[in-house]
Length: 207
Image 1 (cartoon, rainbow, N blue to C red):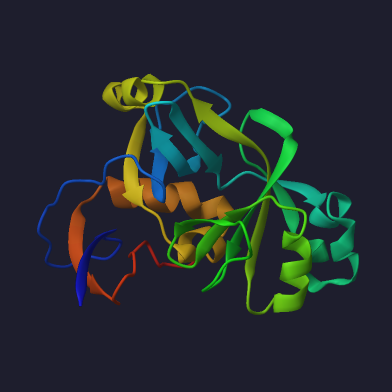
Image 2: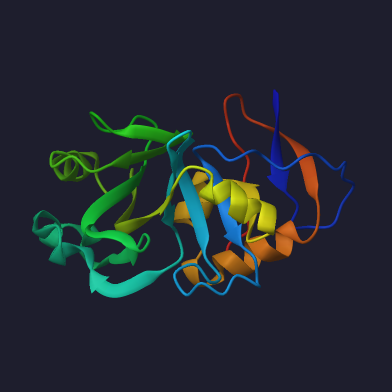
């Protein structure tokens, strides 16, 4: 069994541990004091972090636009009524997909256990072949980007808290309650919990 970090949503014995460092799969949870309208009360999934800066997707800003408007191949699929999310203020003419699958499509980048990032045209055909019951699916217009050192400065200023990401958080927790849930948890304590081998624990409470 591998010991991993997660956030405690329920009361119980806990031993404090250090929050994760910025890295792919880690969540940025906006401080209640963060006034930037692009990021107020947002939860951002980091996709990349390094010397060149950082990149992520805002997870909790759904639109009212159906994904089939951008991916007409899905008009006959049960996924057609899913809405597109605003992934961030940069590149809003670009569509990125997060998929929940044990094995992602060709050329997809693994972000978390069972979570892949894809933008290749053949991804939609792969989704249709896999079936919507096997694959979680989110579509995002735009992304969040930070220049070198910018995210570190924001973290030092207290604009963000860091938490462990998980597939459950992305695909199962209602977006409207995601920030409140994580902000409440991060205001409490970090705990160690046993998880399945190779897994990453996250906040599993459903909204």
